[in-house]
Amino acid sequence: MNQTTIFDAIFIDRDGTIGGDETIHYPGDFECYAYTYSCMEQLKSNGLKVFSFTNQPGISEGIASEREFVDELRSFGFDDVFICPHSPKDGCKCRKPGTGMLVDAAQKHRLDLKNCIVIGDRWTDMAAAAKANCTKILVKTGSGQISLTTDKEKLEGLSIDYIAENLHDAIQWIFQSKED
Image (cartoon, one colour):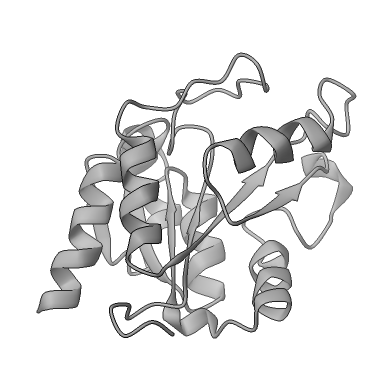
């Protein structure tokens, strides 16, 4: 691990976290927030690996291909991309709140998930992070603000480490907590 880092990797959700809103926007229609690229660069310039982890059931429905999502996410600067292409009713292990994507990434990249951060806008992101013993940052963008009210019971007991206004605020907190 680079001396400037205290974490092995950062996992970031797609829809509502790096761009878009509370709905799914498919490749070609998805737009990142203005600050997303600078946030990615800040993480990477400090020696952190940055991975996308996202549920994309539209793949199983034939709306978009996994390759389209991977290519798009890599173009945003992610070091690796982990996607659950399954429908919620498929019962797979990779779909959040399951930990399959996190476990796969840990095995592939030799990560200790206790030294990783998950940033997302839904209770499912936080639940996956909690099960994997990752640091949990919920952003209020996308479904984040809605999750804080309508999913309050699901969020209770997950011990969210930080509730951020957006991805930029989350990244600033990461580096601030590094200094403390």
